[in-house]
Length: 128
Image (cartoon, rainbow, N blue to C red):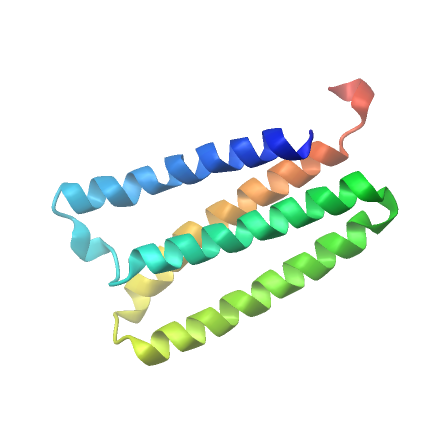
């Protein structure tokens, strides 16, 4: 899988991921979303986009550094998310359980898609 199809697949994924929160807001269930939910959504989606595109770029340039790039990008992503959580919870008074649910909704689904795309790129070409 090349970089452009992976990026387009990710953009479609982000749009599909946003359907449920938009539907919740328009149907009166906006109390299920923390204040500034879209800040969380776009931060994690943007971070995943950067990680995904950088790993695919490294894979295309030099396949030997793929594993190191994956580990480095994943470490940076986790640290950025932890810093974001601390800053967000210090600045905003929110229900922590609701924040946890909303954060992991976005984080885990982004992570699943990221792993799917990266594993798909590692598959042997004869198996495709």
